[in-house]
Length: 287
Picture 1 (cartoon, rainbow, N blue to C red):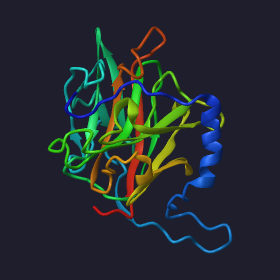
Picture 2 (picture 1 turned 135 degrees about the vertical axis):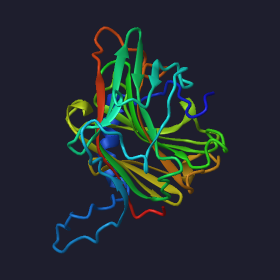
Picture 3 (picture 1 turned 120 degrees about the vertical axis):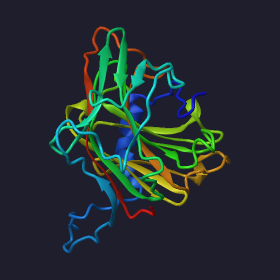
């Protein structure tokens, strides 16, 4: 078990089941919190959600993301999943692009790989609200981008008791699918409470930007992609195990290379591979 995150290979839905999930989830899931510029179709403006915090990644090309918001986690050793990358704080692996984006880049370095992993621990730790990021993910066998959260008491409260909310994960061999998962005591690793969303046209999520979000309330979390809700988990879904998500959490953005779930890069994988983050925003939250 590593100090920050555990992963094992997950059981995934079939394509047919995934499509059914996409089609049915909007009927069952609560409506997403509207963005401030959305108007009701029946006339009149929907009450705007209050922006609690955001990072729009404005700044000169080649500069580091704001140290007021982000920490760097560095090092290698597999990160508990037999991953291959070494995380660095180098601008080669994470930098603003001068166009309002944060770019996290995985590179091949001889026989190894480098990348970046950024967290908001101790700096931005929301509790409830709508949490979202607009991201263009990388592509390729063995590439594993993620936008996720850990409970603010980690590591004093060890994983998985600290809780983990995976807002978006993708493994390169499934370019048209993203995953959303909860990990907690009694439901972690391969037994996490998980679901997936398939691109409506079956296209790769790496082709363009998409907005990945959770609407988080006491006892309930709903996942969405581009405003389409695809799953809701509540206290009833933990199988009688503790629900550990009614507390502050911090964000993590990273691109892993290889590991138990995605498998390792092969001859088809091209480097460098970059995850481009337009923004991270928090609405109606207790910060």
